[in-house]
Amino acid sequence: MKTLYTRWGKDLDTEHVLSEYPRPLMRRKSYINLNGYWDYRICRESGKRPPASFEGKILVPFSPESVLSGVKRRLRPEETLWYHRTFENPAQSGERILLHFGAVDQMCVVYINGRRAGCHKGGYLPFTVDVTRYLKEGENDLCVRVRDISDQSWHAKGKQKIQKGGMFYTAQSGIWQTVWMEAVPHNYIEEIKCRPFYDTGEVEITVFANVAKKARIILEGRVCEAGTNEPVRIRLREKRSWTPWDPYLYEFEVRMGKDKVKSYFAMRCITVEKDPKGIPRICLNHEILFQRGLLDQGYWPDGLYTAPSDEAMIFDISQAKNLGYNMLRKHCKIEPQRWYYHCDRLGMLVWQDMVNGGEAYHHWYVTYGATAMSIWHITVTDKVRRLLSRKSEKGRAEFEHEMRQTVRTLYGHPSIVLWTLFNEGWGQFDTKRLTKELKRLDPTRLVDAASGWFDQRCGDVRSTHNYFFRLKVKTEKERASILSEFGGFSMREKGHSACPAIYGYRIFPGKKSLCHAYEKIWKEVRNLERKGLCAAVYTQLSDIEEEVNGLWTYDREVLKIKD
Image (cartoon, rainbow, N blue to C red; front, side, top):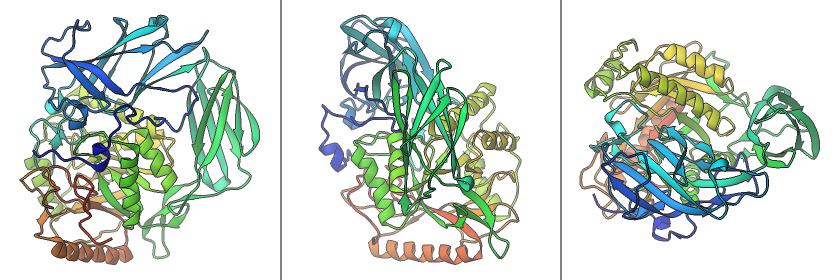
């Protein structure tokens, strides 16, 4: 595979890698970024003690498989990846030190000064370790032990595959989001949850803390008294709606003792309501809004899962807006929280997938067979766990746990308006029960229970994928009809492609024929909008390895269609 660089990867400042504050929904003044060069070692021994020596330097937070890491080596399922660096203890008298990891793929253990301080399983979600009691004055040792069995088990894996090709891409491992520390008082704010009540012009704020104390919320110049771990309703002086064309964010501050945290929220609601003809429509703030979206899988040729810079993330979002899109479907991946923050402030709607897992997929069934069954409108149960790759009870429990954690992690981002529970039957199970649970966890957003096929007649939308047949829409009485994937038109741009092989659903020789087909299919979508279609997601934002069906090339240098 040819090595491609983005413009941000070429100009990467290795002394200041992704140095922006990584958690915009909870901002403190104390912030120490630990990105940069760490020591690393890859070994076959699975020992539980840090090694005595290391083999080189790795640029965190880029995975070892990526060119920007400086390693460009695949971690095999039977191998262990060790990270090491030192840091100065930043604690003042009485302070706690929290060590945060944006994401580590797939399982890891954290050691401070040779002592096990914490562990985490799951490659897509953030976690925090209170390392206070393991620290000493002055210089301290930090080691992280990582194992990643990738797609060889039922863990969440997204589109990663050891034997990559077609619509599955390079597997990556290890630390792939920012590592950072912050100093907090002994009693501190752990979490803030904001729920807008759009119709009444109120916001419900809950301040979670490690102790029951009084907290003060400073909003719109007012001070509101609140108790920790209990919700408080605040009526806004003036309600200003959040929309893609006016993405207004309400800033506020929470103070509890010596701890101060800044955050934000927005006033918006997403609903399914019937139009004058009785057709269910997706509404933003009770107004019908057709959601014109792009599939966005968040891969980069030089950083793989990790965007080379904040500016690179902003580029993808802003370019999608410039092309007339108001929504991105974040597919089979959870991004760093700064990506969602940029969607919040720039006004980009987000459909967020739960990251798929399960045993090896039976593509003869979930891809080819399901496509054929969709022609004849054959409904299939989700109880066939072997065919849907969900035999493991532990795997099912892990998916459910990570579903809850995904909602908890991303709940505060107003840009997210829909959760996709399952995609194309990949690891699908208990759809009706999990949809009900997801709606209980988050009643403020819509749920696409089964994107593509294997519909179990639940959720807020009737979701279809269509790459091969004439586009059409079938409306229902209660659920909105959406085209959650279509298009996939491929064209290989010479000099900007990573692979000689081409994967796509229709392949075009040049820009002229590609643009003609692109304009034609969007004209068909606009016709279907009048007949009841509520949203459409074109595949995709950028090329990824063999899959050259992006509007942009993989290196984000060439736009293939007219803007």
